[in-house]
Length: 268
Image (cartoon, rainbow, N blue to C red; front, side, top):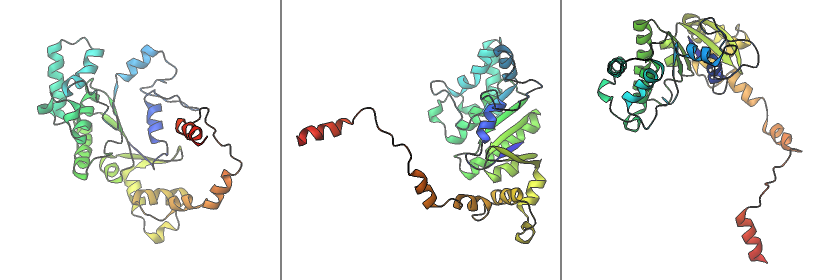
């Protein structure tokens, strides 16, 4: 499942709610048949052991080697023998193509390698569900494509379900079976990849018959410079913004700047 939308639309906020990290203002979240916001901390931790997360930056501990980062969930949440943990770590690193880099520190890794190491750690407890937050962000096109193929490959080989938050359309259409489009905190559509692909390929003539939401989604999917997104940004004029400032409260600092005080004394 790919969750997509423009910057600031609520993708990462939704992801935080799905993993039990940010309580929603309304509605409910059900993860493995349970509401993570209505269970005890112990029960929530049990739920969290069933999924893994690849954070946007990789979120590795800089003071630990790659192997130690991957081993951490196993040491914290299992009673496995240290030798078994070492074997598991090497297996996970091999799955993401980093076995030979096990003893390196995060600072010695490239951006793509950090993402792979973070993914190996997310796989440490053999999760049923994997969450990805912008897995292709900040990567060059080749590395991005490799990460996409890795996500698809792991889903097929391990039978794990993947929920991927992204605004990179090349990645989205490579990864997705289903897609969800979010705009201003609302889900506009949940459909198959093929449905969104047909919308993306809709001609200019056919686009006239689309609904407002469909035209907005079409522009986003195609990356067109003109369309509902652009019209929305231009709807409020500079004059309206400037007039809106009139009467606004002005922040007065509670402490006078030191340099200002020195200059005043010097002037006297």
